[in-house]
Length: 254
Image 1: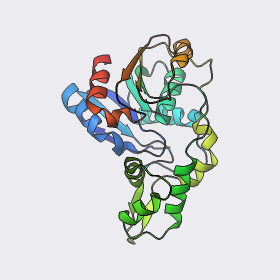
Image 2: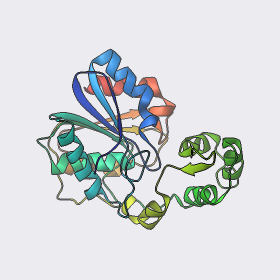
Image 3: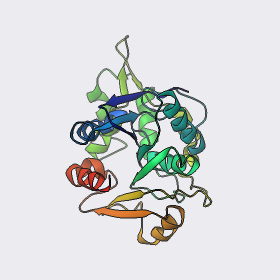
């Protein structure tokens, strides 16, 4: 499988993996900054069934970790820095544990290696309604989504998945059916025997409950060289809500 990506700059390869229902575009501002100011070659990767990457009937962390290894081989990358948010963080954790010689440093953004119950039902219902609707504009899409999702920033994030086709109608970039069929996979825990011993940073938003204090011991068992950084006044979308603080934490670690 050949994953789609945006590649910015020259230098040490730094791969960034978006979260569930996201895409490479979500990280363009931070990616460009890291490339221009800190001399990284930043790869903003669309994971399978997202963005412009291939759609498949299957969706699992094992497959997505294999996708990252294949991507690095296709682009002749070694000793990479790997950063992932939420679902992308779990992909990054497993890729680092499975291919430790490939990954020089690991950054995990607001996700733990534990199991999470499916909690995207409302969003998936909204996106299903979008897919079934005959939209004439993004404004129509926002109006329709507002019946399912009250928070405007979340709707704007999801509407990035709308793509205007050559016929002038709107289609979703994500492979919605496969993601709905495999929603249990998105919350799946990293197997406890998966360990990555390289330098690791876990960043959490102080207002987010994705990583709890009691999770830290389990994280340390699987990532013994871990550092923790909490960003004040930020939730799960810590990189978007507090971009400057997040960027400073990443640069400090690197």
